[in-house]
Length: 395
Image 1 (cartoon, one colour):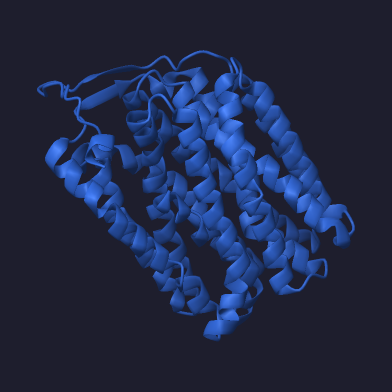
Image 2: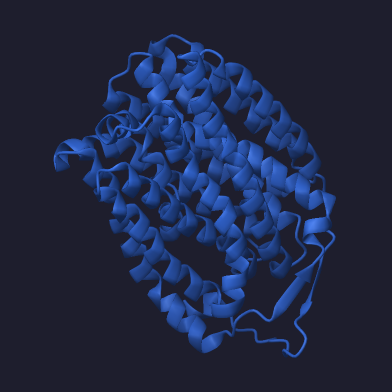
């Protein structure tokens, strides 16, 4: 939960102060679009490295080491120039991508009888970190006298999480060898691609909210702090459905209906924040949060429900979160480029509708009660580690 808490502040903290970052660094709106898109691209690209690093070092040790990379990337934001900001975004995105691909596999391994509820708790922690960062970064800027130290502040909870995670690393180094299993067939399976596209399309909407909801509200007339609080409200509301939607989806034979319901709430909230009177924006932000918390948690739940074992789940997670999140980067980039071209936000509604409809199609396909056709087996030359020792025993 502590690690999940730290996987979104690097994204959600930027939006409320993006106007000040653009003003003080002298970057263009197109550059600002890349600044918001860069971490998401790295989330996807470096997610591919997660499984390989876990096979070499073990998941616990990999997560521990990469937490310091994440802290470095966020801390670099204290340097108020464009080069440092782009470097910070890329480093932080790489750290989040590697860690994010490993956590669903740990859930499948350590909580095989409670994957839906534990996925909900993990998603709730992830949403909570994003919400708190979105709501408090602008006020922190007043406390620290500028946006740069307010953004860098979010490196501190990453370091706290690393220290709390340290006993898990020591336990793993004594009780568990690196994973000797290999998995074949995930990348060729149509169902795996359907789960991937559902994750990518719904994530593109989430990253649009992280990056652009506060700037949209500011341009509509909201105070910077209020805009950040509304964005925080939208993210905090995700906690409700992040906890409940995976449990409901886990009890359903077909998860497509839950995905459709959550996507409907997401689209209603997005269009309300974009077009409805500003005085009603809190209501639409709540609906948006309910929808996005549910869609993301259902997407994570599908990773574990569509996999027969933890080895397939780990590889499917790597594929879904690497390819899916790379695809998701197109969302915030498209919004930034469309705004630069048109000068307003009116046309964004068409983009929101198109992405939501595409996500609905793949959500229904991915929700079918079948498994990804993949084979997991021990690597040649390695014994099968059949110990009953688990991370729960270590704890």
